Length: 464
Picture 1 (cartoon, helix red, strand yellow):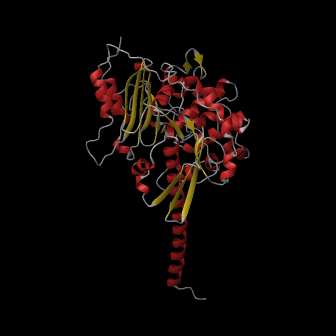
Picture 2 (tube, rainbow, N blue to C red; picture 1 turned 135 degrees about the vertical axis):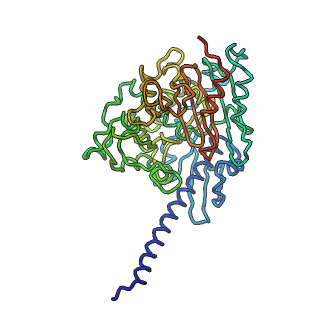
Picture 3 (cartoon, rainbow, N blue to C red; picture 1 turned 30 degrees about the vertical axis):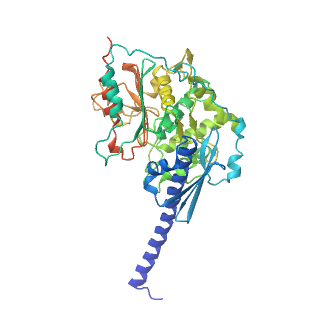
């Protein structure tokens, strides 16, 4: 058969068409899964009206139809009637996508009756509870400037730059000195932390270190790595994003990150399967995949029943510091998505920040091991500008003097948990302060947490 130029073009066209169709299907699966998962969590964890969720959180996915079934505790999303994805709600565990396992198998992972119910702390005094005594602000705080700083976080005079702040809480010397919520949100509305969940994973690992079950210098116990050079990767290198593993931290296409969160039965397995792009410790490269490897390691170390594992964060952390409304959501395999899927109120996030501000202690009890907070907030050697520690972002700069840091006008000792769409828990030891901001800012450039921090700090005259 004679091969002509036209036949070659046709062959190449058919290949391109096939690749395009395959890519389109995969992208459709991920987009539809995103809509199902986010809508499920927003309506059933945060208890928000579905119409509000459609107008804000999933507004760019208008072509995807959403059905909320309150009786079944599920959300089904469908794209053009061709691609359907479903997420289910379980009390105490939030929402999980159906993927790889059947709905029945996922629901059987734990009886809802075996999941610990948060203790009602509404009448207990802050910070363990939610009762706030009427306090007079310290004389070194300018109340007018402080209120103006909180209000400013909710303003966006340019209507094309929609900021959508939903909650701001400022804690000074252990007391809430400023608090504001957008319409439709309250102190009891759990909101998505996205990558702030990584810092929760940091805390859970720290607790296992304190219990003697993990040493950060140990090699990561991943059976798939034992016969190759990845077996040399340590817990510390995973925590510091210096493992050397190849991973695409990209969210606007079909990538490692999007497949991990929205199209895999196990979030950890995507990252576990990736090869080394370079030797461990040679480069710093932000990777949500490494966090989910750590999350799987945590599960393996606990090594008890599903109920024991699901209750572990509440027993050892949340209950101890009064984080009443928080949930971490598991993937279909039953492992917490430690990189991304946690919901908590602004006050709960403030308590978490306060734990770190207090060097890992709470009401006289040491929750995190001694030295863990310092370890977490010490710059990773290869991170440019000294901007990353161990699952916390920093403002440390390149050297001890703090040169070349992202926010040169702000204290170099502040560090923070950070998440997509502008989530932040900021810890400022030199001011004895924690600042929480939660929102739905979909354009990253529209929000700079540094502006809020600077505005708040201007209201405080540092005591000598």
